[in-house]
Image (tube, rainbow over all chains, first blue to last red; front, side, top):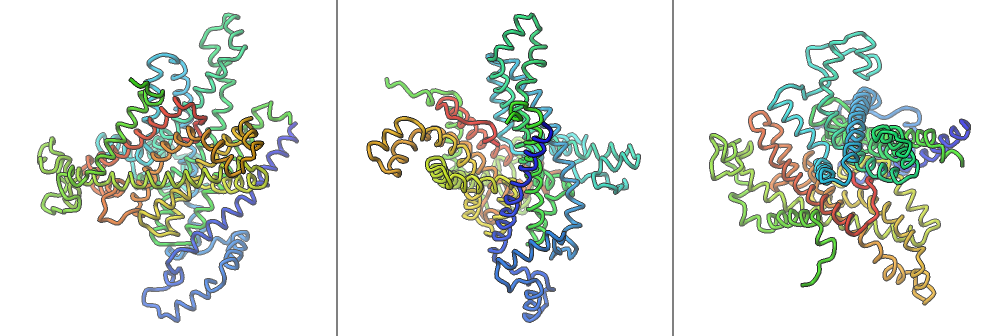
Length: 338
Length: 285
């Protein structure tokens, strides 16, 4: 049985490879149609035309686009992500320092969003067929109507500016030293045994993670509600009632247990969206993750960074979706039979 | 009296349509409604509070921004950009997505496979990232914002609609049309497409809300309209610089975006319930 699952998961990985390849082609072609000249941007402003031309050749920009793409792909596969034309340092290093921050934020956001979604779904199901349900339902639509980056601004205003109880810039207060072991700040502060820094980092994450979580929750609420409604049509719920179980026990032990699978698979989709959402939330909170790196790179038309960061986001989305699919296989015995 | 169809009697649809109508009127009659020229700067009256707050003035009902421009007038004019993008971009995304969905769902086979793979590639991008990258390639400007939204969001229509088209194509009346000698083209246009319209309309309403958000995001990072055209995202980005002195300036454009997106969402939700369109929650975010 485990062998079948392993085989299915492997197949998912294999399917992801061509997808990623086409993603990289798409990225490369889109960024090559842009009207600026990366060579001209890589030399000092007082460079002569001949110097720019030399730079073009050095960067391989005189070659046809398919050939340029193959060179870039070859470099990527060898782990060479290029050099930032603006910072003049390796892109790999820049991504490696910002990616953990983004992952940490996205995971926190997802935990909050999942928690809110589950509680909200159970609550709205509990009030089914009442006026409260209709009100809560319109409430979820309202919550859904404010995108994550506007939630970020709103939370920042309320808890940071007006009510000054939570910090809203960066990952850590400037007076604290930042331990670097894995790059994941919460983990690093625990490893090095700095509880004060850990708490400080956690405080800095509350508002951005809340913004992500709140906007990820409404779809989870709605799917959990509708799949609970479906589950309650089943005979075993009726039988549980006949056996005299309490409503609460029926909901948690029989209803939720069976309704959770579609919700889990939706959470996977939401997690992918949430990764995209981190970009603007990071900007609002000046959070030093990949989103800020990306937007800075866009302002400077720093192609090597844009390409690599864009690709990294896609790799993250694909990894999340493979993980969720695999979890789904492990948890759902019906799918394993095939 | 003529009995209204169920969708026109739904409270959600009425609420959504009324709110949309108000915003449409604001956009259409902006020059008459706005108390001031949205671009007139008054450098002696910057960051004025709203009229009801201490120090506010009735000439600037919602106060002024960091360049002394009237917030209310900019909000009203900003509705023009938001609605233009919402209408054109979502219609474009719908047309592109629907055409591919009809092709994939009706023809099946390798066409379906190919379109399915393209959708997969698109879905491995977080939408915001793909929109930003497209904007880098296309350059800023409202036409390119519209184009970017079409090129990113056609998948939302294609994915959902393809499944629906596949179901409809199996129906007996479609087979009957073919037996009557209808061409494939005519069968799709006359028999398959009408059955998918309820779903299409619902998706369109939801997509309009999404388009407003994407435009706000792109103008927030300075890639949408030029600085002489008021847009809500741009107002938020400007107001963020002076959030301590004038928190209100952030709240108003955020509120405007919220109202418009809520209007489209509640309208879409009402349509989904009353038109019984098949739609899962995954399509909404």
